[in-house]
Image 1 (cartoon, helix red, strand yellow):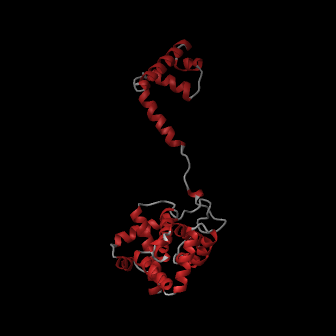
Image 2 (cartoon, one colour):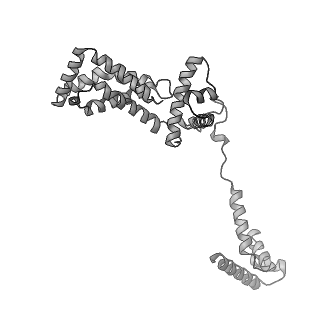
Image 3 (tube, helix red, strand yellow):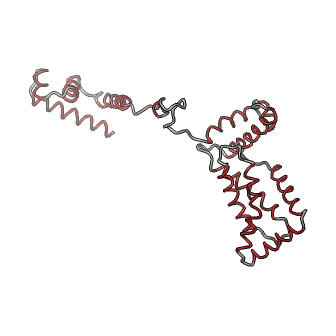
Length: 266
């Protein structure tokens, strides 16, 4: 679930305000970053320990999503490490002012790029994340699930966009083909309901092709081919059945096959 720009700004102001409010803590942060710049790994570890609660706090904002909170905390913690390594203390800004957008950006990127089984367009992904946040907020306020019109009014968009985003939410997670359809172990699985290969389509295509290839043959040649390849009769049996010699049957078969090869080649 993506934090809005307003939420991020509030977090920055709140955390930075607390950091500025304590001169001692602010000075300690400056000293730690100065030691980090000098290559002191212990100072970096101290900074990580000091600001881990910030990362956990930002991760907990998303704990009502489908993602495990432990995974979100890990993502936020890794983003904190990036922020510590990239922060330029000489600029004179509070570290939290830099860290919060960095951490929130990594969380948003995770939800945008890593949690979709079927990925819709980027704009629809971002709308779906906004929608999920609105659903959670309005559900708490209304003590019930919000309606489509209420969601549209809250987000300032059309109801059609809400419906599209609700449909796109189905792409956030896949369903195993081995999962029972009704949640019972002895029920049919989704895989049991899927269709399989149908040889009828292949045979239908073959019949159409055969009709085209034999269109220019005489009725006797087509009958000889049918008896030989469909009924699996020998040339002698075919000759006896239609009243011609085996040699004539052989000539008819070879001539018909040559004609079909010529048609197929063109």
